[in-house]
Amino acid sequence: MVERQHDRTECRNKRSQDFLEIELIFRDFDGAR
Image (cartoon, rainbow, N blue to C red; front, side, top):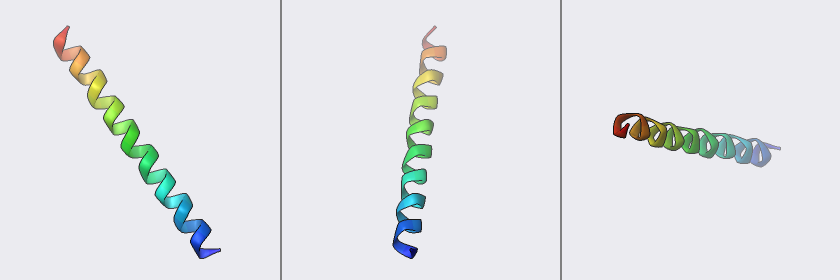
């Protein structure tokens, strides 16, 4: 049970990290325009 919760938290952290990277890429596109 605890392990499963830990995995879910790690997955959520990775997802938010991916979102941050995508946001940075979009910001770069806006700056290049």
